[in-house]
Amino acid sequence: TKIIVDSNSYFRLAQNIHPLLSQPFGKDELTLYVHADLNAEFKFNSRLTNKFHWVAESRYVANRSRSINLSKAQKKEIEETYDYLWEHVQDEFLEPRGKGPSPIDTRIVATALVLGIRLVTDDRDMIELAAAYDVQQISSMEMMKLMLDEGHIDSDKIDQVVEQWVYDNDTPHRDWRVDFKRLFGRKAPK
Image (cartoon, rainbow, N blue to C red; front, side, top):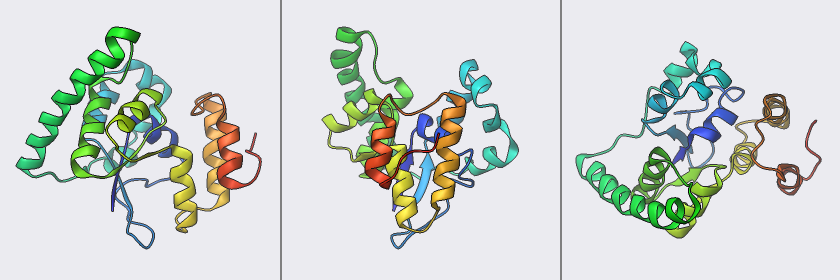
């Protein structure tokens, strides 16, 4: 079962859960992938390259080298869906609010929609866009819970990931500790 991970969740999970991608786990052979555009997004965004310098290390680059294989028909449908979703983003996000999902974020949602796969994201705008089109999405913490339940990672690994978020000042949102307690039944590490 394929799952697509957006850039913010990739940056939050991949440093400490390695290899994160293309490694089937659990009874349903869950396999995480990033969109092929992630490397371009990282390469051309100096804020990301400075904050997440580890992403350029060869072992992480190699792990991102495989993306979801798409047929020509799927690529065409994703492009058409992207065009439709991008109009929605402009009408419902950019014009009234002045911000919203980026073109790459919108393409990731379009890919998940066309392929009927789950999306891992902590981005509020992407969550809202995905919900508007019934794209199943889960947060980075929910992904870790799924990995824990499937025996792919343990509680120590979860603590390591969360401690990294706190250290990097890159937590998913203000109330992330509430979500942690709800999902894992204990207080979050400091």
